Image (cartoon, rainbow, N blue to C red; front, side, top):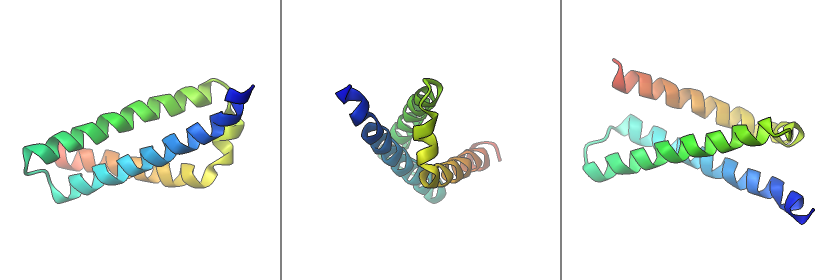
Length: 95
């Protein structure tokens, strides 16, 4: 039962890391990637973002919707940054 008590804290930490990854990813997409090191950093944050998003979706599917609803402020912030990230990728790689 103790593991259940730690569960919201782990979810919240993952959400903060995911939002930080989105901010870094968008920053590098906006300034452009000119060095190979920054390109690898961009890929790292992109894959970190994908991995944490899948884990968060898994948490919601497992039935902890109350936990997901409890963090509505970060959900709105996260979804808006996620949309901006998708638009950045479309703008930089398709157009």
